[in-house]
Image (cartoon, rainbow, N blue to C red; front, side, top):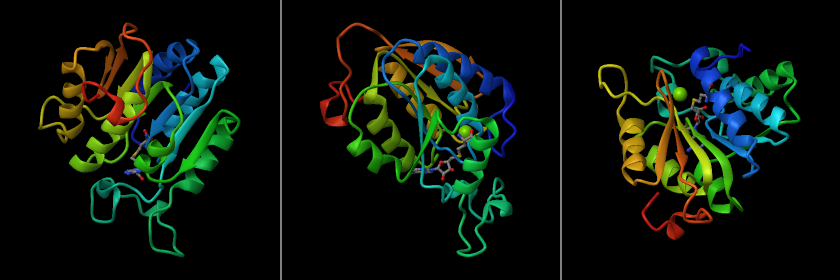
Length: 217
Ligand code: SAH
Ligand code: MG
C-alpha cells in the first residue's frame, strides 16, 4: 500500500502507522482520530486500517495550514493555495485523495480547530495520531486535550519526533517525552520520526478531558 497524495508521511512510517492502527482498531475501544489531515496522505494508511477493523477514522484539520506551511516557509506548496482567497485550503485535496483511495466511507473529515473539536468530543478513542501544528502552544494544546481521550489499552502516535535538534523542531519530542515520563505508557513502535505508545490497561476508563486527567496526560 502506498498513499500517493501530497504530504509528509514517508512510506515506512505510513506502513508502521497502518499496522499499529489496525491492531488498535481491532480492540473495539472506539474510533481512530487524526490531528492534521493536510492532503490525507496519512489518513489513507489509517483509513485502510479502520476499514479492515470495521471502524472509522475522524481526521481533523482546519485546512488552512500550520505556520510552517505558509508562504515563505520551506514546506509551503503554492498548489494548495485557493486562488479565490489567497489562503491555503487543503480540503479539496484531502477529499480527492480519499475518493481516489475508495476510503470516503471510512474517513470522516472534520473541518475545524483541533481543540474546539476536542472540547465537544464525546468519548474515548482507540488511537490518537498527533500530527497537527508544531508550534509550542498549538502542539501542547493538542496533547493536553487529546492524549487523555486515548482509552486504556489504546495507542497514541506522534509524528515528527526528532531527538536530534539538527533533524527537526523539538516541540513534538519534548511533549512525547512528557507523556512517556508519566509512566502510564509502553513504547510499541519507533519508525523514522513516528513514535507510538500504548496506554497501560490498568486503572479503568480513560478520562475524557484535561480536567479529569489525574496526572496531566
Ligand atoms: N498528517 C499529514 C500532515 C499534516 S500537516 C500527512 O502525514 O500527510 C499539519 C496539518 O495540521 C496542516 O494541514 C494544518 O492545517 C493542520 N493544523 C495545524 N494546526 C491546527 C489546529 N490547531 N487545528 C486543526 N488543524 C491544524
Ligand atoms: Mg508530520
